Image 1 (cartoon, helix red, strand yellow):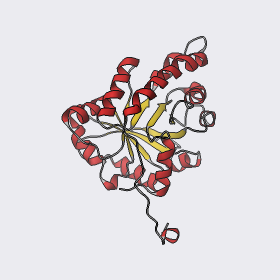
Image 2: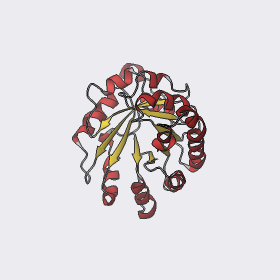
Image 3: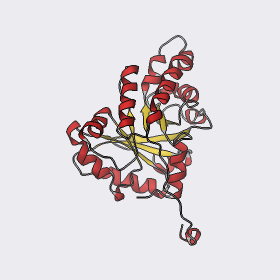
Image 4: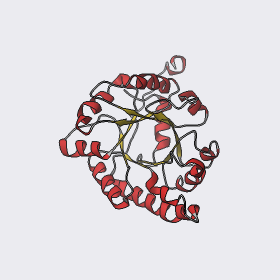
Length: 255
């Protein structure tokens, strides 16, 4: 499915100037979220936030050049939160983490996908899939009626895409889950070779700062250093670009 005008503009806002995605996942940072967002967003193309973490300060600390992604939840929607509220709060996209079995999409995905399409917000889906089930799952996720625009996939999916020859019809990003910086860079390289458009990097860039005597100083030094290395490593990622736009004389009245 070709993204709508609004989705195209917002997907572009999530990527860097060359179309690669470098997203910092600040979920779980709690009261530290404004500092994480403020320091690391200058090096990232976008930041993923949880609306329960030090809002609205966290969202307002983002660098002007960084896109904002709000999560909707993990397995279930966050109480009191919605796609509409995320849109009103300035999101460029919404994120949802869901367990996925076989080729049957979870029912919640249909509802969220429709609501995201209504507000023309791209949907970043982070599926949780058994290691042996990626081929069937990826084929199902690319169906037109899924309304999924971007995938955040773990290393197991990267292996399937690279070694088994599975293909993914949607733009996808590799997700960092460990605390080993060197291993993470290797995963980014492999993902780029398998067709990834970038990465989502979580606590590797900020979690170690929590509890230190100078957490903000750690972010400015080690956190920024780790993120810059990840960005440099992702230079071989596949850039995202919107399909060529055509002039539609009836667009205004039909929109």
